[in-house]
Amino acid sequence: MHTPTDSSEFTPSDETAQQIARQVLARFQGQKGNLLPVLHAIQHVLGCIPASAVPVLAEGLRLSRAEIHGVISFYPHFREKAPAPIVLEICRAESCQAMGSDALAQHVRERLGCDFHGESQDRSVSLEPVYCLGLCAQSPAVMINGRPHARITPQKLDTLLKAEGWAA
Image (cartoon, rainbow, N blue to C red; front, side, top):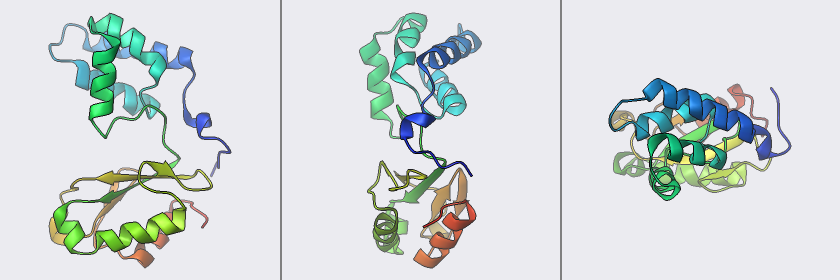
């Protein structure tokens, strides 16, 4: 597994971001209320919505840069820089909290050396909160690189992260 030395390694170039933004705009052209689908599509391709894509989106959607930035910053799902290769999301909803996700979050923050919305010290894991994975009956739950996992203990989480390539 490639371990980057700098998180900017994950962020696409301005030229790439603008090119993808134009392609996505063309795909959703004429569709009403297309801002959210456009943002999701760009993030799906690039892993983030870089600031350099915002002017292209503003022009193409006939919105202000502030409006687009406001939507990006409002929804916690959207990010302006690409995440680390391993994205760990810990459920912070009430059911998971009642079943131990607070202790799980504390464990992983200590292991990774970062808080939510941060990266592990080796920059290989991004830690994000999520507010319900739909696994309430199997709490606490996490998602790793888009795959949900239930009934997570600190030990089970360590095993899952190692299986993803994280070397603690």
